[in-house]
Length: 381
Ligand code: FNR
Image 1 (cartoon, rainbow, N blue to C red):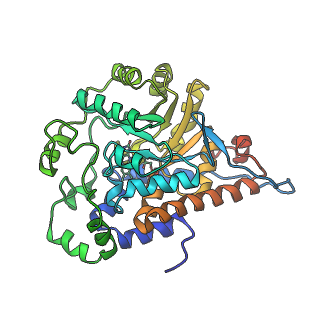
Image 2 (spheres, rainbow, N blue to C red):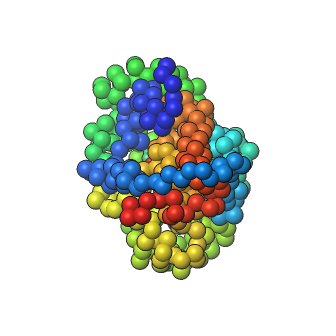
Image 3 (cartoon, rainbow, N blue to C red):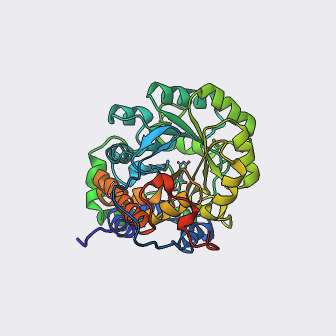
């Protein structure tokens, strides 16, 4: 196997090892994928200032996100069905994150349940909540996250209605997946993945099946999810969820300064500038382009984080320079997971950490707390 030095190396290996429908599910965006592409391209357009003859000894990337110590300001983003990139994927990713000293976020739409992850890991994780029409189910999810010791709730606001990914439709990605001939033939070439799946019982939406009213198997699940995302979601619901949860709250999916203002007024602890990795509103601005305006609008009333298009430690550093207190990665860790399970996620995080460290030094900084817009070439931010 070629050396694995970059997130792109992990992506290519994941593509070989993960069945096509699940690889495509991760590596796709809505409609024309223009926002998906812009997330990465806009990072590449930002240029760094090289500094020399500056003391580069004793560097540190350590920081905090909503008061939690992190070894670098990076967290794993909530991603649906990560347990289909690799058997028991959410448990493995949570373990890798804990080993790397960064937070892990479990999606509502995960394969391993809240309880599965809590029982198989030592460190508290964050739970991401989608607002479903069935409010009794939401209440139970919040209570389960509390009982499992989750240290923060991440409320996703940009999925009241599901964006369309053409590849998912063409691949027959649904719950349960369609056993098309193409999908079945593809499985023959993924023996490692198949063996993993045969070795686990966790193969459906663990937070939902057996917990949502009337959802006992994959067929009833399919009907349930199709109509559960709540198009009536409002800021009143945010308040209701905040009160019901009572702990640290993170609002995910803010891309506009007006919404950021409302988020700041909501009393949440952090917001995440995000376009869902280009999976929702195709044609929306990239996250990194939206970040500076939102940081300005929020003016320190809450922490501002971002995600979308981060593929290297350099990207993390650029986001921090533009005011992000923390950065989430989605696909980079999914590629690691699909490529090599827990070790692949750990490797993705190690790659990003090393790139951050070297870049910070070459920009003349020793402490991530001192990284600001001065490391960027003016006019490119
Ligand atoms: C996501 N994302 C997401 N967000 C969320 O709040 N709940 C979820 O269940 C999911 N599911 C999901 C699945 C997959 C396959 C992807 C790629 C993304 C969005 C995710 O949290 C994050 O916003 C993006 O992944 C960030 O962009 P990058 O890092 O993937 O470019």
